[in-house]
Image (cartoon, rainbow, N blue to C red; front, side):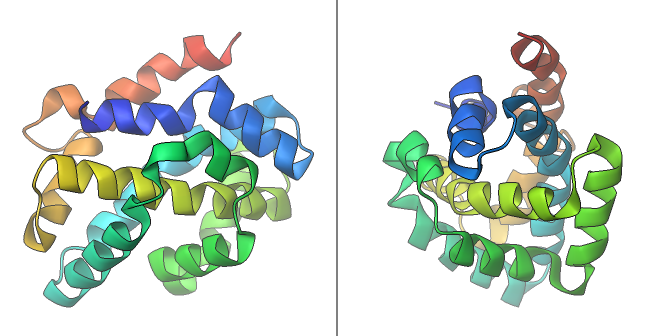
Length: 174
């Protein structure tokens, strides 16, 4: 399983449905927010991983969450929003409210709902990325490159997030 398949598990209808059910939100809104937020989440993690200290911290977080990668749907149905909010604060730092506002504006979903959706998926995203990191043997120094490849800027073009997001229209349009 490559990284695009791992991330596909987070953006599929079952995952969006689990988050929507848990938060009592519309599944299309959840899907819209997840689709809009993934590039921002991965980009911010890539930026954080561009320093030695940031890469080490992210690598540790991914490793800690990777043990939960086996049951993503179960995790999404009962994710701890407190953990997710901490993750978002680490990823975005002082820019969190701006990011939430931007995604809210882009999707038409209220900022507090965007925050809850992202807090719900953040632990699972780290678990999936951690599993991908382990599967592909990526060390802390290689995290920025791995995340860049997911965003479509790396050599692993078949693993680009752009191809994942390009295919989401058909998934979410159902």
